[in-house]
Length: 514
Image 1 (cartoon, rainbow, N blue to C red):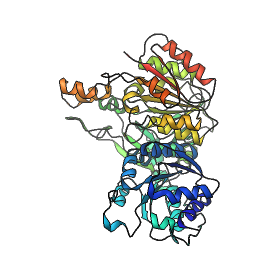
Image 2 (cartoon, rainbow, N blue to C red):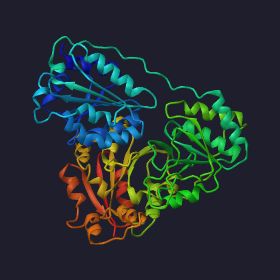
Image 3 (cartoon, rainbow, N blue to C red):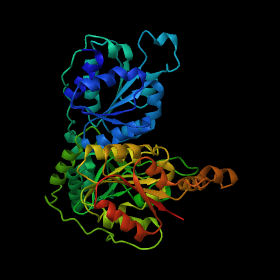
Image 4 (cartoon, rainbow, N blue to C red):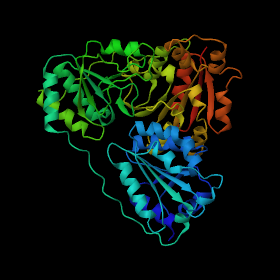
């Protein structure tokens, strides 16, 4: 057995059975091992950012890592943006990065790069294999690192000679540490804060956004009147009818400060302190009042659900608290695109237990309140701000959950970072409805230009405009094997979307926005 085969068998023994790949010459022995070893599903992505974005979406839904297969340092560099998003989402991921044979590296061939340096920029665990006999051990350690709570990025660099060399050994799965319990004194401190009667904000993220965590937080809200919010970007959240309605902290600094005005205590549950996405002249970086106290109930790697449930019980909250009616009743609206009207329309149409992958940027900001009343669903969002996440995230999610419809809400400018994911959707026959908001402009950048105190001009208009030439998403999708159509009214969208929900397979709807 060579090193590559031992690595594939070790990954399978460790529970990794899906590999998103864009291989090159250095990875050919790993590819050959995939031919010899049964059990690994191999999914081709036409660009490395597709590969890593798919692995992120897969991990968010599967709760375990996929492997990626990438070609040398430049290939890994091409995928870094979506590794960054995955890191921010605490998605477990095992990157296998091929590299030159150990004895070839000193000759500085064209693809020679500081692959370890690139990997360390976005990975929690990095190792370069040194022998074919030890690469199985390295693979098991990579999976263990990726599965360590709350989920980590592990990058294993695979020099070609460690892959083709003989003497490979399969390593059994290594134990994964459980989530740590929150210390009793921490629980008591937060309990005192919640009993104080002072205005308290609880910020929920990560594990706390599952059904169990949200229900426990809803009980605490019922017992204390505390306000519940999520960060502006969420990794995965259970939403819709029968789930607690918890809104995001607004993206715009002034809006966020207004929402958090008067807060005396901020309690963090798997989240960081509310912080502005960017710095703006004359505006604070932190969004909560400067005199508010910050308390950490649970760090991302800790058992947030158990902590919330303990608090709810100690505070005397009823075991079952009725869910209030959604603040907005979803209904299909007629007329041209408007963010709130679109949100109401899609909320009325989302199928039961679907998965929504959102990279809507400007058009996506109004989506949350109307969709509280939608059918139960999971919501995945770009977490690290590296746009172009929606298409590949939806693709990976569809592979992880093949029995669930996936709805991708994608801005057109951001979508041009990763349209190749549509080809993978067609090749794998995935059940994804892609909705592209085609406003033919980097609209968010106009708002950001004004927010930093600058004024629009000829250069900024040129740099933000996507209408010369106009992108044709229908032709683009069709060229990659995905059925596509365009709409320009909400009623037209409703008809096409409902039809797409009634059948399986990938579909793209270009919503042309004037």
